[in-house]
Image (cartoon, rainbow, N blue to C red; front, side):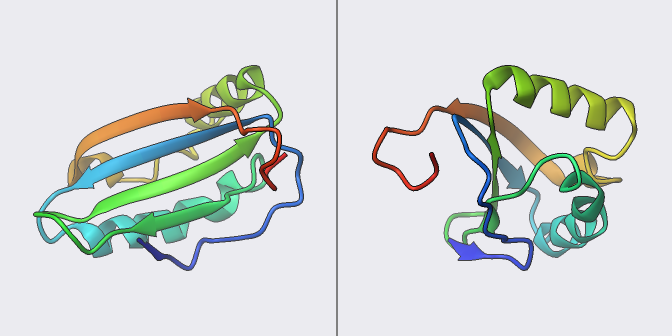
Length: 114
C-alpha cells in the first residue's frame, strides 16, 4: 500500500487500534483522497491518525485508515461524537464507496504502538 499525505507519527499510548478498509468505486480514489484531505484536520483534533493508505492492485483500489485509541470505549465515544458533530465521515465520501469494513485490534506487548 502507498501511504497518503495524511500519515502522521503519534506518540500517544495505544491499547486499541481501529482500522477501516473502504472499497472505492471505479475511478473514485482521487475523490476519496480529496474528501479526506478536507475532513481529517478536524478529526485529528480528537484522535491522531496513524496512517491512511491505498493500494494500487485489484479491480478497484482499497483505502485503509488506522487510528490509535487508549481503549475500545474511547474509540466508540470519539467515533460517535465525530459523527454527531458532523465532522465524520468525510462529506460526500459514502457515495464513492462500495464497502466499509472496520476492525478493532489490540497491539501485542512487543509492538511499538504500545
